[in-house]
Amino acid sequence: MFDSKIYIKRRETLKKKIGNGIILFLGNNETPMNYTNNTYQFRQDSTFLYYFGLDQPGLAAIIDINEDKEIVFGNDFSVDDIVWMGPQQTIKHRAAKCGVKLTSPLSELETICANAVKQGRKIHFIPQYRHDNILTIHKLLGLAPKRVNDYASTVLIKTIAEQRYVKSEEEIAEIEKAIEISFEMQTSAMRFAKPGMLERDVMGFVAGLAMSLGSGLSFPVILSRHGETLHNHNYNNRFKAGDLVVNDSGAESTLHYASDITRTFPVSGKFTPEQKDIYEIILISQLVGIDEIKPGVTFKSVHLKTATVIAEGLKALGFMKGSMKDAVEAGAHALFFPHGLGHLLGLDVHDMENLGENNFGYDENLKRSTQFGLKYLRYAKPLVPGIVITVEPGIYFIPQLIDKWQGEKKFKEFINYDKVNRFRKFGGIRIEDDILVTQKGSRVLGKPIPKAVEDVEEVASDKI
Image (tube, rainbow, N blue to C red; front, top):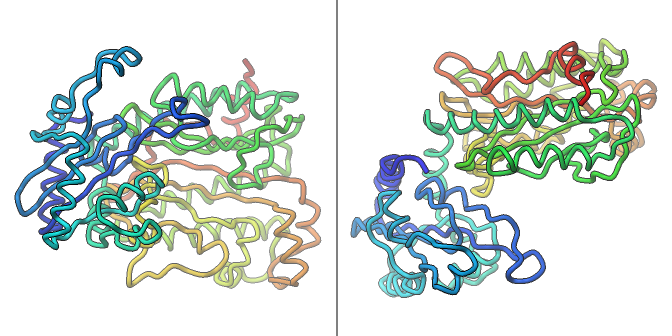
């Protein structure tokens, strides 16, 4: 945990901005895999961590703004529990670490909420993503389960997003700790992967590093010879000489701050000329995108600048034709680059996605696009100092998408389908780093992870 003063200050800021009513926080519970006592690895809710820092299941909390009262709810462990789990700190002892003096058993939460409902008091809560917590809200507030998230507090969502998206020095330090783990995950994968291995051989190695060096993975590893599948979680393919490996993976620090890094490398240690040509387009576009990041600049404009660099590079190789300004405006580049440039990063790898991206990534002045590719941009608003955001351009040859667009004669004025079809089995390339917006520009967080062609080849050739 951070120092208790940090959590106290966060809650004080929240109370002042909300101004009235009760704020309800639900922590996460243990989740069974296949029977009650065989559970998945526990992960606390990030909003609960942000305001209370208590990393154990079975907790809830309220902030009663009008009565200036904060209570953490939870049940102390019985002797039967201790037999299996060892001695445990009391709820009161834990709550004191985040500056909360009042604690109560979980059963008291129902009574307090029932009284507040009877009195017609406003109870603020954020959207719930776990079914057990949806049912808890139903029980506490009497809302129909299917309608629970319809009643989530807009003012609370906006206020939490405003607080969480600008990172403090302590938070940035935690993210950099997670990126230190990513350095080991990425460079070790380059050295470890060899032709003849299964993807899961390397994925398991990478996941083990995250477990041994921090709090585990920040999301399921994407590690595949099929880089054209953006979120490929199938690890059963066998690497062949000449394959490219996309390793999109991240770790959590011990306080659960995330990293998210992608590198693409040749499993045999050397890029082919065709792979190198396309790789260098992505590398240049990423460097241009990072250079564009500065306070006041919209991330949407950074995305479009990066897309234009990609399109111009593909035109130089004969994959595209015509005006690349017009092609990007029309969305023709999305055949090759069908996703957004990046996303916010923090306690969540897609930071605050549970609050709804349109609640913090867009506003009344900047509406989300409906255009294929651009609509997947998760954050578009102007950048401000303290934001941490990923920059992850890619080029992919997706046979099904190629077939669809070619069959529809889509963007034939911009796309050279004859050349594209010769690369149907190419796969995909992505490069990603985590970027801090500074007062005057930006900074790539963490120790540099090899991404220049010669540096990647040097590490990938040094097999262990």
